[in-house]
Image 1 (cartoon, rainbow, N blue to C red):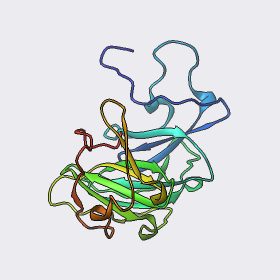
Image 2 (cartoon, rainbow, N blue to C red):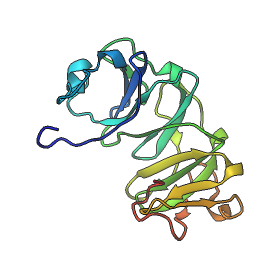
Image 3 (tube, rainbow, N blue to C red):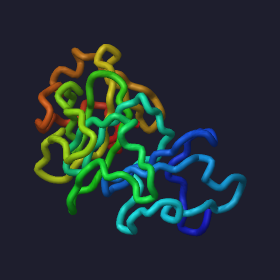
Image 4 (tube, helix red, strand yellow):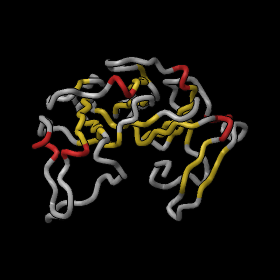
Length: 207
């Protein structure tokens, strides 16, 4: 690494894969993995490969899977579901998918697995709701996922209620809460939620 650099994302990919990059401005960029520099070295800045605005940061980067769906969320708690096949950008300018206006910004991009979402705010309040309450769109602002007086979203996870909600603590131990144990946190989308359960990570993230 150059001085001041550090690792942000690491994942396996093949040269035939497409890499999707989601930014705080709500844009998706697509880079062919074969275009990334190989071997050792400092690599190449993403902003040289695509036309990414200087005031935007990368939210997530991952290998494209055309049959998946993604749950997007902004810092202020808005979000929607988008089919992953609809976010692929064919130009360097990227594709605007989530509409955000400052001071709000895109915060999370989570592949959907299961039938429920668990969202936790910077206020350490947890809310669990059915994904059926979230609209599927190809572009937009979305709907309110969780209500906040102050702050915004900290973390988001999708899961199958039949399997329960799991998280990992700082010692990498996994905890799972069943539907019955989650009863007081299950509510309607856009409600405030309740303080996280005992034993939830101090970071406020699912791990």
